[in-house]
Length: 117
Image (tube, rainbow, N blue to C red; front, top):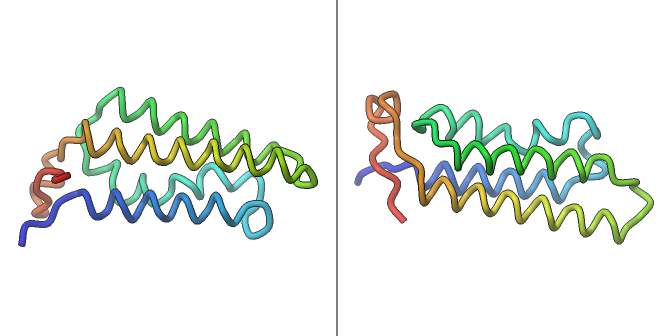
């Protein structure tokens, strides 16, 4: 069975969505943006050729996470909207990686094949 980057991409996206759902409460405001992209950076980003389209989507995730973190916690409607915006950004990052992502030499060296959709 050929191992591809699609599985770590899906796991990283799911981890990011879980972090978004846990806020506010389990995650500090200042830690949220980095918690959201932690799995992506650790398990996916370092195995991809750099692509500005993917990096732009990663930046969108960070921006959306900051917006959620800065939303007043007592305004449930705004929290819900900001969380939905962050989840959308996470989805777009996942789609961008699946569409444009190419494994780099390090990925190939450890046996990760092409991203299969």
